[in-house]
Length: 379
Image (cartoon, rainbow, N blue to C red):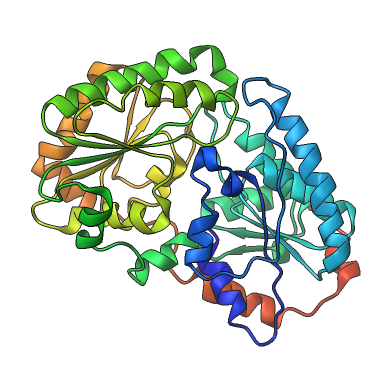
């Protein structure tokens, strides 16, 4: 998600960038998305490999965080940066934030202040990172206001928008011909783009809820609708969902990918602008809420995972019920009034100039480590 930011920072003559990569980017079980980074010609300073702990056990996450802290700290000691830049609400990010702030390195956090109240650990981790960090780059004004209400000083908070929209604005995504060649699908038939992540706090209901979605997808596939299924993230419970996805391999019209990558993901969403193509983004990923409006693509949010997330009028909520999911997807494909409404939705996550704004901010900032590290609470 930070690709536009990183690429733009590398263009600066005033800044020296050290890019550290870790987590599922290096894990072949989740698509090894480091390939997307290298395709973008982003120079990687160090790959921080973490042991593949047993994802079926709840001790997985704390063990992972502790190893990130250990290995990230050692790299920070080598680099000795003026700032550390970290992203969002992942537990890998949490480990990096602990390492950086405990080493008295001013830390810049992207995407703080958002809300997802649906049974994940994201809110707790995100807000904890906010209180650890020294600068906050938000994607929307609501998040900016929320961080200020958390007692953070105003001068530390900037709303620069959602960085991935920079790539969309510049049309840096796959063309219809590239999509046909790579994915072997027809752009003249409806496409459902499906990703459903586990909800750690509702782990006992994970499979039952996922199977409701699968029932709807199978029924849609029988009606000649193309279903592109991508793997969930690496949260606790993911292995169970992957096992269910594996069972779909023999179903006609269902295509399975560990990761599409940003380039093809947005290329598919952009197909909605072709007069003969119907695309619906389905699941419980934040991307379905934050990245669909700029294309005017309908998005169906299943279950509570993204409760509280700021969204446009192109997003429709549905419970974990296969009949309701099927009916709503069909409506998003067939109802011209609804499709027109989605195409007219307002993008509320910035203007696609995040990278430029952030680079300018970083180049102009006068380093005052004592001031940055001395945090005051405004209440």
